[in-house]
Image (cartoon, rainbow, N blue to C red; front, side, top):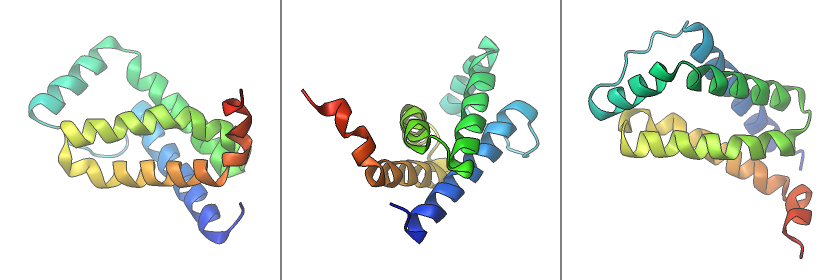
Length: 125
């Protein structure tokens, strides 16, 4: 469970979540807004006033847990629906960002697989 690849995947995923989560709160990365339907969708989410701060705080928290190697199985399960929605957003609305979305989903899936023994009791009858 603690192979070098797993450690690198956990650290890279944690760093990505920390940076992109903090960017949702502090807007330090220059990112031009997507155009068309993707821009309209993000604009409507931004109008709510709470979606991006909540997702940002979750991503920062999950990133910190992954970097500190604390509650990693819990952090990965909380991240699963977030990473899946990131993938779907980029797959259907913003293809240019699909690469990073695939990396997040891939790392999340690999790390969940590596920690599968922790999840096994959830699926017992």
